[in-house]
Length: 342
Image (cartoon, rainbow, N blue to C red):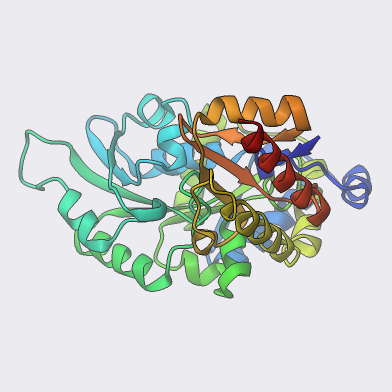
């Protein structure tokens, strides 16, 4: 099986497993796990924030991040229509925070400052939701792993600041952006009230994400972590894998990006595929074919290559450390065979 369904499919390597097995642990819920504490301190520094908190998943980072900023009862969150909280969190923002999700359209999963400005609800109008939070996804996910230009992100933050809105950075693949363009994580996170990174994507850890922000916000976040069942005990075992990933798997994200470009360029040569390789910034390749669900099923059944259908005519393939360049070439050949067979 060549599994390009997602970079969530990565498995911890043997060296990471050994570090996890011998991790020093304690009661995380009481702040007594030294490995979790070390991870939180390191990520807080990495993101340029004074405090941070370990969580089981990136989805919980978004859930708690939104709850910190949104007051139940009609507050609106402005975010791209293809962003994770809309398409992949089971309606959690509405159920857990009472949030109105107000999509802001834009190319490649990114919206402009002008589009955000136009989407905000009038502050003095009691008939509409109250604009409260702006959420940005870096890199974009289902829109194709695109990296927000720093000046575009800064302009969005300026609009948010002018309207006194809170801001949240969904950094599930933030370190992919760091590696792709060389802008430090703290620079991307600057100006956001909350930001987080995930360790279960390209970094290859089995569990974990870290949410960062001000000491006051993280103190309040602990209440919601407890409420949602996210408080842990001897979590140093999994936090150790995250620390190992920061030491060994960040720079190698460039390999995933290179393999994604190889895949994109190979697919773009096929007449039945719709794809511009220049839109592939990191490790996610989204391309068009006729009848994507059937195509993906045949690709898996006939060639052992796993990709994901995003709808009737879009497919997502994601490179990661469990698929090498040889596997990428095999996947390209399999796509060609399926399309050629008709």
